[in-house]
Image (cartoon, helix red, strand yellow):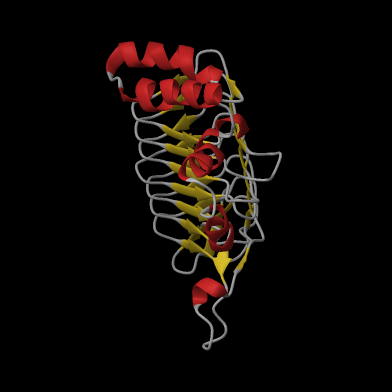
Length: 242
């Protein structure tokens, strides 16, 4: 979820200034050249040659790329100096990692993670996304939006087409456009050893406690206790793991 007032403010800058600010996270010509080599050129080369090239180029633009981490074809990164990726992690093809944020936490992906095909992760303008070790995001088309902050614990399984969005539009008044009423952003916490099935939606302000399982297609509108199994729309606890 984007901050529309801040986007409008940024549009007052020149095209080059806006590109440097929103994509490159730098202000010099050298920053631009290195970014373009890595992201525009390096990301478009398929196969093993592309993998090897990105292993060399991406550590020059990202805050950190750990040993043994592989970045797939056509991965887009924005504000790369706020992106930290640990060791032994795979970022699959066509992912988006957008860390344009004022938060020093930025976007952090731990060790031995899998970020699946066409996964979209954005911090929002003031938020963050922290994904700890051994997390498997099973793409395609999972969205994680950290406007209010998203924290994902260790050994978490996230299915395809899951939406974890830590923000919500305010829409109470009818005399003001929804886009002009602002947003709320409380944050989402997913603790260790959680499994979110295919198509799960986690709304803002939710905490899913350790060991919980959320069934496919569920919409999580309230906290899920430890080791609970929750299903349905809205998600309700039907049993607890033994």
